[in-house]
Length: 369
Image 1 (tube, rainbow, N blue to C red):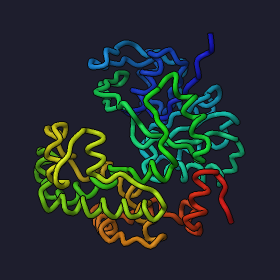
Image 2: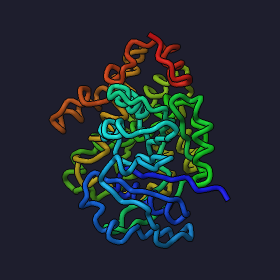
Image 3: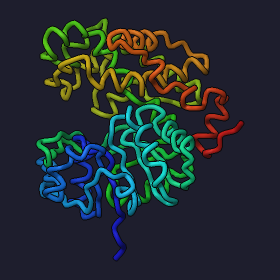
């Protein structure tokens, strides 16, 4: 009988705890890493995480073989390294991992947001990491889940099909093969430009938060985010941002899904326009707005999703005035410069590449000078 692949999950937020517990329940030797020892103290005392997934008939104690705040220890025996942290922490994780990664290991960002794998690869290179690893990113997170306590997690839903792409995409198949025993839900997502430019959170989250800023602050999020918040005028702004995203993708030779196509694919929901389609989606009813504007919908989705899409648009001749407006408004609200903090093509080291050279890099892994 073949030995089960050894996993390390980096990040002990609700997503990381859920993935680690599920892997443990499935019998995979799994280590959980978190940089703050206090956050994993209870898990370490118990030796694992209690998981509940009522709809999937999965419940029980996910035993872990390791629980640590030492990255060298976390990566020592790992074959598959699942990075489940906010995308704003990807660069820091890459820097900490760089000295300890070894040939043959696989690192997957869950999810990459936009250009996550490109950023991770650059940070590894900048920190002289010589290991021959497989690096990949998912388009979205496989679980809808939450943390029910210091050593408890609950799954609401496991997505049935999640696109994934390796950097370079010529390695995607071998990543899928390694994942298959644990997660058959992952499918070939093309390349990391495709997974990154099909990032719907970039379109929905920041603009919807900013255009409802008064309501969020007045009610502390006590209204239906997508139903009450998406009025006809707000939907027109979302549609304009979506057109910019699809046009940026097109400038790179990529056919991105429109928001309407995504709603149809994800929820079998349609409508004459975005306003109607969103209101036809039963799953959006009852979802409350963020309680504050100090939320990942702005501090993560703007610099890690909207900025790289707009930056690519600026480089390849696409008007991204709508995206730029949202980025600037978010910068004013948070008193920061998200253009400076975000994943610009200059910061990613791809600003001098032609479309052909960028495509060659994400498919073959060769950065032409």
